[in-house]
Image (cartoon, rainbow, N blue to C red; front, side):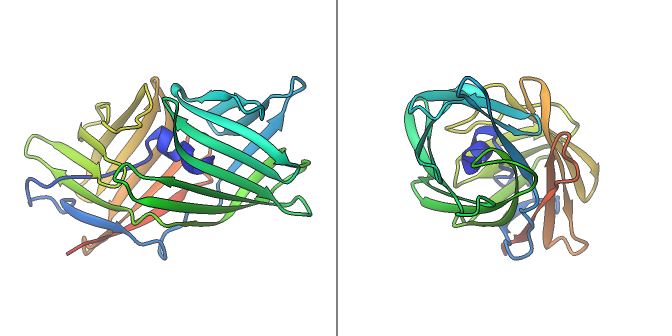
Length: 260
């Protein structure tokens, strides 16, 4: 489920090449060994009517584990959740009724560890597997409670391209998910193009220095993600630090290295 949410929000970055004047221009590859993706938390809570609520900062939605589709962020993205047994939650992630991935959350025997394994196929046709291990952080029973990620792995290669133009715009492209964004580097919001783009999502980037870009991701005008990209002194790598609004203490850091 959590991998699916990243796709729905559109948390991808980056682009094609035009001018070589900027140190941002080029192809960049994620270095997972230097990156930090754990420490973020989310909450599952169960209501009296049998529905469940997922909450992670400004991202909130409800569903019931009854095998019926429920919307996530917009009407096109839906999840179908079932509980095969008291230790298993299965989620079928769909876009416009078509299955895009399947997630299986397995609860440990002592109820304190939750392992999420998501499998699916990217828009370029490549398969992927993502695994995340979460630890209970607070009171709760079964799947209900607050969980904090402690381990994460993903088979996606995560290679991106960035290009800047003389008119002050930058283009970001993720070939794997076929995400494409062209935006002015002055904070002006712009919509991205992607096969599974969520309705109402816009992005804004502001160049605060020659080596730093601050960005925001908005959902229907409300900021949900904030972050910045900062080049290393040798311009051979950069770090992308991001967080959900209201959860500034739970930052994640992705480190990308230049592909020569």
